[in-house]
Image (cartoon, rainbow, N blue to C red):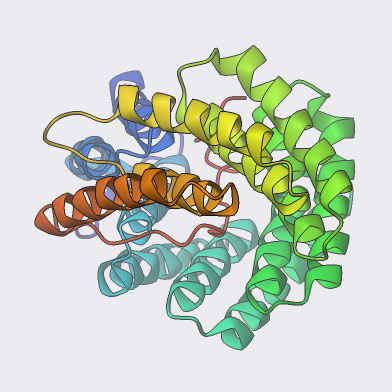
Length: 329
């Protein structure tokens, strides 16, 4: 993965290499980090096997190194994520590419967040936002991503009013530039709902979660992880309003989807989380026997996850999709 013997200024990235990266994006969106990384590495190997490179190809290399960083970050592997982020940073610096430098800062902030270094993450993400504002202005999707990322950091710091402000800014930009029926908009509704829920504004949070669910079902249908996430969040909002029957129904919807998607040899951490929510709800409904059975299911899933050496992902991860088109466009 070294330098090339020469430059061809008009050389482009061959379609077959772009297709490999897109296959990686498809796996990444399905939260299959290892499978995504396999395609990204194939794309990287192919682009680096070319005799000559161009600026476009170097930009592609930088982006794929960041893609690989994201897969390690999604698995909680900070050391490997940092390694690939630093390679991308070197390429971005050599290109003097301000926007890609900002993207590298996004990853640095994400890695620090995984390490719970929230103050350090905040510095990186603010520096990234400043670069983007200078180059792109405020009315831009990449800027919306920075506001979204900052909202997640503030949420981790329990500064929920700050988180609400950032997520509202991201949502406003995305609604204008993406339109109502877009997955990025659903993500903003979802995270805005989290900020509101943690300020005990349960009714407002419920509305945001319901907005996200409508979009996700329209785009994905019923059988998708994001749809299950929305059901789980709506359940939390109902539970916080002591509407336990409605909460249980939502949690059960989420569990059913998660279980349909997980395979026998690959357990999903989301299943354990929703079982915990179901057990808590049964306890609130004074059904201790049902709670005990559900907690045992939760424990079994967690044991299987340990056997898979699963590293839990931060539930409010820093977002990186806008500039790499990892999500539906």
